[in-house]
Length: 209
Image (cartoon, rainbow, N blue to C red):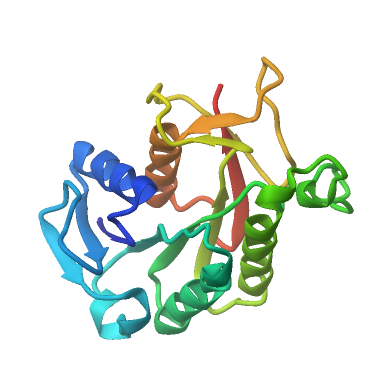
């Protein structure tokens, strides 16, 4: 299996690459500047400059793009839609790092986490942007996409336990009543999904055990 990780120099991207390399997967880092990942194979290009030809030989493309800058938040949608466009009609699967804010708080999917009164205001712009990104993905039946939402407390420096709970559209707590996962364990879940391909055209979520 051949995997490309787009925006691989980011904190999540580097850990996803490292996890794939650790498992002996053929992984390529797609970066705008000098490669800072464990990958030996590199494509140096901006996301928006990638072409269908660049990605034609990959089984899976993982979109690790992320930004917190308010002015750049729409890029969550524009970048993932660009990847969708160049992968349209192919067998290459597209896995996207999502957000927790758009998870539903009820089984009937009528209310979302980021609409709750106590949702932190500082995270609302990012949550809204990633909810919009997911909404646009749901319109695509020409791409084998999977949107992977982390827990609400997404810890960049957390440890790798190698264990997680795989959930779906509904906001899920672990046995301790927590919604938390480290970037490292999220990388484990992302590579698991890349290898299995069990949730095509679905949103899934992961939380630490």
